[in-house]
Structures are given as structure tokens and as C-alpha cells.
Image 1 (tube, rainbow, N blue to C red):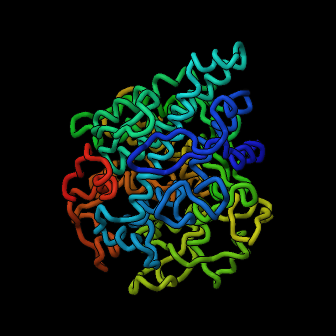
Image 2 (cartoon, one colour; image 1 turned 120 degrees about the vertical axis):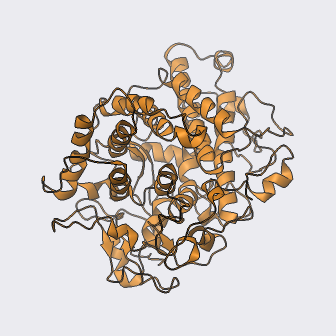
Length: 527
């Protein structure tokens, strides 16, 4: 099923959207009219695949083009941009490259001119644009006018609900990272429309309302085609949204009871932990994997891209590490590694081994930031199957490892944290059971089990379980440690021993280019 849907994603060039930060919504610019593109159920599914494909693809033509202007296609996909913004300003990752925008992250001195932040912002808004176009063409009136009825009409309505989820997810990204972006839906005019700015609180309410509205409209949990949205994904995003509500809405506006409610829905839906942690990040993680709720799908033949897991794997290794053993015989870019604080999370006084700790190298301390050999390399992701087979890929560097946007382990951790923060409807005994389930998988036995926990433990355990999965910035902000002088790591703020930075950096700036293009926008405080 992975390959079939991937082929649709790779071929879904039926809508040739243009990128523009000034006009967020544009009609197709090629000769394929809407009535042709949406003239059959398969046509609707192909355009839906483009909406999904906006996660995994930089553009419609492999590595050579991008939906975004002004940035190299290899850097223009969603996951590479999102991963950089979530991991590089934290203790989990540091990059040796001096590409424009990269050093700003760990130095924590980014400005509104950072090209990578602007690209992430534009990528998220482009994805909103693609979803909006699909939603305009899948209203009840449009479906009826094109002669669809019965089962086919209901199927298109399901597609529509999935597109609403994907749009809600990107608005969550914009809310989490940029707080107050422009806002546009399928109901707004097309063309020379300048979208108004929304606020973080308004956007929270919108995302929440969208997810609650589509909850009964999408397919039941674990019953949709692989890599498509179902109720499990809706519940998982709601749980994540509610866990961070005090960040988005302000102190005293916690929604921890709701986080317990929706994480519990996911947990009760029939997902289970994959028995082997490392198998979550291999090239066949799309098969026999009961833990992943919704992935971004990659394939070394059908969706070639220098971002995504191709980037995560290649940037974490170099030629001295035998790239073929990582399933990328033509790769190894030597870019990202950890600071000593990440492997430090796995230190265990009992001497037991946490199998989640997957590092390479013998120099955990970074003295010279330009030396890839300093700092342990993270080898969590490998483009080989569980039987050691490397999937086909022209050139030998493209990955077929799917990236888990949501997986069950996160929901266990959400439940436990929400209980400890005072949410009702859960209990610590159940939470301990979930935490120990993660520990037993990590250790292979009960030697790492715990009998109690506090919030600091949860933050550390999230680091051990979810490292390099694009969570850490959001987690550190929720725990009020991201900018704090009392919680530092090597090279935080550009200083070897680490330092606190300005509190306004918990939110990224709106790009200067969009402020110029859209007079309705006001820059975030501090920038």
C-alpha cells in the first residue's frame, strides 16, 4: 500500500500551484482545468495525494524543482526545514555547516531575515494553500454538480476531512513556531487577496474546532490506507495541542484533562509498541508496525528528495563511517551531531544499557564547532530493512525510511505528563505502567523500571524516547527551559558552556519578506 499511494503522490502534478507569500491562494497555472482534474474519483484522490505529497516533496519534479522560490530545492521540503527549527536550537543537535541560516539556530541569534525560517513559514503556508484549493473543489455543491453520488460522494467527503486535518496540522506548526501568522481558508477570495493576521489564541481555537469537527468524518483509527489520516491521527494532534495549551493560551489556561482524554483515545484504539525500538526508524518501518499513527512517507525511487529522512540520515554520517552500512552507499554528508547533553540523558548508574542510545564516535564534547568528529553522531535512522537489505535508490543516497509524525509512545508520554500536571480522568498508576512499557522496551527487561516520576523525569524521558524526531524545542519551551539561564547545554547561545538567551526567542520572527508583502502583519515582539 505504501508504494501505490507513493506513486500517486509522485505523479500528482495535476495542480501546478505557484509559490507566493503575498497571495496565499492561487488557481492552477497549467492547462488542466478543475473540472478535468476533479472529474473522477481517481482525480480527486490524485489531488489529495498532492496535499499529502506537500509533506514529503519539495516540488513536482524530484530534486530539481521546488514549490518555494528563493531556496535550494534540496533544502525546501517540509521535514528538513521543520527538523532544523525544532532540533538545532536545542541540546539534541548541532550542525557543522555554515550554510545561510544554519549557525543562527544553535547560536540562538536568528532574525527575521533567516532564510530557513522564511522557507519553513512559506512551506507551511503553501501546504495550507494546496489544502484550501482541494477544499474549494470538494464542497457538497461541487461534488453534486460533477455528478458524484452515493459511495463515491461519501469517499470524496472523507478525502475532504483528511485535507482539513493536513491544513490544521500546518496551522499548528505555524502557531507553535511563529505564533501569529496570516490566516486564510477555502472561503476567502482567490488572487489579489491579502490575508489578515491571526493571533495564537485565535488560531488555537480554530485548530481545535477543525479537529473536533472532522473527528467523526475521518476513517476509524487504524482502518485507513497506510499513511493517510484517520481518527487516531486526529486524537493524537488534539492531545499534543492540549498538552501545550498553556504555551499557546497563557498561564492558567491549561487543558491537561483534555490531553488525558485524547491520548487515552489513541491508547485504547488498538495501537501497540513495536517490540524493537530501532525498527521504528528502518526502511521497512511501514510494515508490521503497530506503533506509528501517521508518517511522512519516503521512497528512494518514487519520491527522491534531499530533505526528509534522506537529509536526517546523510547529514548524521560521513564517508569515514561506511555509508553503505547505513543504506546510503553514495551518501554521507557530515553535518549534524549531538552535544554531550543528549548522550548524557542515557547515563544509568545501575550500569544497565538503554538500547535507545544510538550514537557513534568517541568525542562527546564539542570544542571546535567546525569539526564533525567532535560530538557523538546520532545513528538512530538507517536506510536498511530489518533484514539488512538496502532499498533501491538511484545514486545510492536517497532514503526509504518513513518519518513518524505521530506514534503511540508520544501518547504514553503525553498521558503521564498531563496527569502529573494535574489533569483529571487519569491516574499515576496507569501513567507509570505506560512509562515502564517504554523502559522495558528500551532495556529489554524490567531493570530500568521506575516506581515514581516527576516532571523533570518526563522531560528527560521524552529526550530519550523522542530525540531527533522534531520535538525538543517545543518540549523545552513547555518546561520553561528553552531560553533559561538555569538550563544550559554546550554551545547554547553560541557559548561553549552555554548561556541563557532572550525570552522572546520562544517564538520565531515572521519573515521580513512577508512583512513587506503583507501590510496587515505585525512582527512578533522582540524582533
